[in-house]
Length: 116
Image (cartoon, rainbow, N blue to C red; front, side, top):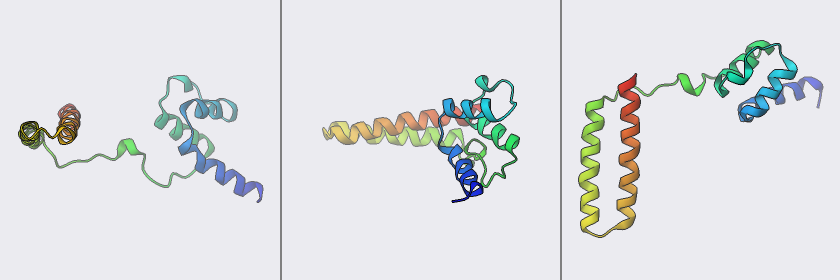
């Protein structure tokens, strides 16, 4: 394995590194300023830019799921609550718990959509 192949392999592993490891890489191999205040996505982008690495795919932050409105999410929550009540009446604890988590996820998603 040549040094170039090792370098490419190391660059690909940046995505899997923790924020601590990325900060260490940024501190020792680049002249970046303010690395301790950066989040993981920002660190990755800054390190890749500093090392002139071509980014193969878009960062996960920039990919947004569009097409669902707050109204649709509220309708979905109402439907999930109705199903949860049916599961409670049937004394199906497992399904009640599953529906509770789905309701919580839908509420979180609704908050994200309403903020955007």
